[in-house]
Length: 242
Image 1: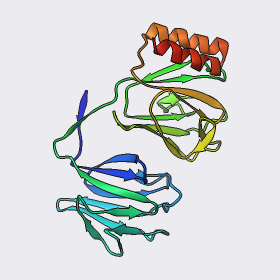
Image 2: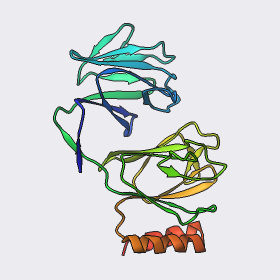
Image 3: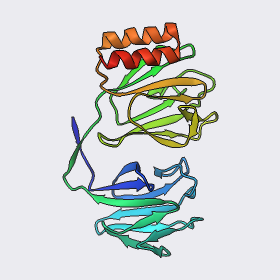
Image 4: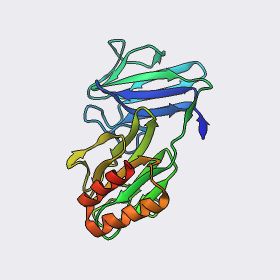
């Protein structure tokens, strides 16, 4: 499957990799770490509402919103609304922004994405979802619903980036945090095969289209439920490599 990409994309980078990718529709979009931001990037160097992007017929303009660490284009601090062209270097806090023109370009949508609960009363449950964005939480409207008191109503989100960049796991200001391999994270990249935790609930992120049939997937989920999370993960990795 494929979907038409809007004319502009925004890439948010640190010194090592792309952290987020946003399609940009016409209008005003606020980038910041607030949950209410249109383009939310939960990074400590950003203000809650850091910079606004104005997308119009004439192109893109940037407007700093009184941020603490400032917004800069080609090394110059942004004071007034400033035109932004592809190729310009833009930094906000400790992050870099890249404007990408993708007229009439198409990108692949993710196939099936698999997550497996490894503990609590729902252990062994396998979620198969076909969406580029998955919200994990206790709410009935969550894409991956986890009915556990330690999980917030909207706890974390997984966004598909691209085949080469993988997925982005982001904590949604949850009460009890999101952890990857035991380390608390605000955002991190997933490639498939990682174990992360929301509240007290451990989840195996199996990635897209694991090389096992649905029947074998359910058998592995049953083994995880019977033998426990750590042994279950080892067996899952063994069987999916066959």
